[in-house]
Amino acid sequence: MSRYLKTAWIAIIVICIALTGCSKEQSGASEEVSGGTEVVKQTPGSDKNGDKYDPPIELSTVMFNFNYPKFDEGDDLNNNRWSRHIEEQFGIKINTWWDVPSGQYQQKTNLMIASGKIPDFFAVTPTQFRQLYEADLIEDLTDVYRDYVTDKTKAVIEGAGPEVMASATLDGRLMAIPWSGLVKEQVPVIWIRKDWMEKLELSPPTTLDDVLAISEAFTTKDPDGNNKDDTFGLGMYKELGYLFTGFINAHHAYKGIWIEKDGKLAYSSIQPEMKTALEQMQKLYQAGQIDPEYGVKTNEKFREMIGENKIGMYFGGLGDPNGFLYKVTPDIEWLPFAVPSIDNEPAKLQHGLNIFNYYWVVKKGTQHPEALFKLTDMWLYYFYETMSQEEYEEYVAVDRLGYWMSAPMKIYRPIRADDTTAIIKVLNGELGVDQLAMRPKGTYEKIVKFMEGDMSQWSHRWQFGPDSSGAIAIQYDENNQYKPDQFITTPTPAMVKKKPTLEKLEDEMIHKIMQGASLDEFDAFVEKWKKLGGDEITEEVNEWYKGQ
Image (cartoon, rainbow, N blue to C red; front, side, top):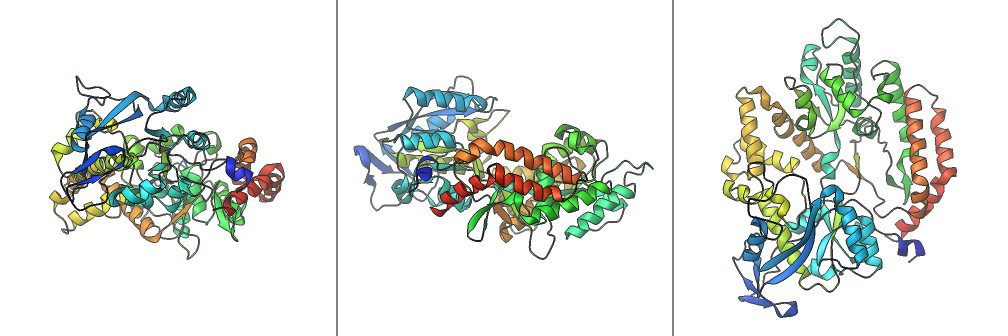
């Protein structure tokens, strides 16, 4: 293995992890495990119950919170609904050393690691993960995962994408459990004002040409009816997020990720498809379909313009109605549509590593690392699966109390496609309402209110009902319309030194071309990118890639 590979592995956003669940089913009433502790069989076949340690074991950890209440009066960090239930159910006493707001967690764990004293399991950043691995302070989880992970937990983690587990594997060994994330639910869709479409008698877009035609109509045909030339067909602001990547992904172009090309990794932003997409965006800008002042406008100003009836279409997130559209346009329905393609090949939506900022690691020498899988299974059951109102209120949330934050381990699974699938089945009569888990059940009830005439519930209808953004998420899943970043380790030495400068050059080039500069600016940028460090970074990236 090369010196670089030896000193730079794994990078990604991940946060707490945990795995739960019962150990593999054994015959007999108990099984002898490490440390002389017996695991006594509880309710067979129940993911949320599993086996109980006798005598009980203790595992230490640290936590972060999201700045709102999670304890009942009299409860605290080591005596709460989750800690009592885990000890009673599994014979596991969780000893939480401290709990801080999420924004302080990284600094607090850095100080803790520097002190030389770490708990049995906790969530770490990619950099901390690498440091702990090189210091030989964390447990190899390869065999533990193979022998003890439950089907439920395995499906969630491995369903996040092969890159996720690969990112937690160092020198061929699984050294952490990734907190699987929701990145696949953060790819774009197109949101279009329903009233403007109806007024101009426009059909739903199925091709990129349809999107361009709608943009032109929203710009030139006075969709707001005020007899003024003051509307823009396509929303945009200075930050090149969804609004930009959604459009270029339709052209099979990708910004800022590494893609496989001719057996190697190549930087996406310097590929010819990017030039084609920028040429089309320039045409929209020159035709007045994009706000000429977009380059100095913030996200906040962009949202104000939507509320002021200036914008009728944009590339945004699956959950935007709940996020801000309902707040700025409460009486206006927005319809979601899948990102189309410039040709007959389906568009693929770019995304980063599908984790939630951290990895779960186990201190080397910790007894019973398999216990983590019990904790994740319990989490998955209460947070995603329970059909009991009583259980949901006991362990998830009620009356502005976020009990779920006290769960010592968490992993995330995508809910939009799953919940939408279940809700549509109930609406179609394929399932009964009592077969819905508590999370989608509440959404279903709001959709029913919308169908009965309560227009205030439109945001739920267009996120989780038929033809909703959730239905588009199902389509994306079924067609595998994702383009994950293939560079899934920590930044290379050249990246650390030169990436900020190169990213600034890239954004400047994009804005220049969009606003009318010659397309030759793209070719000039590519040459400059290569000379100022891009070639060096590419070499390092592919040195890493050869070892995969």
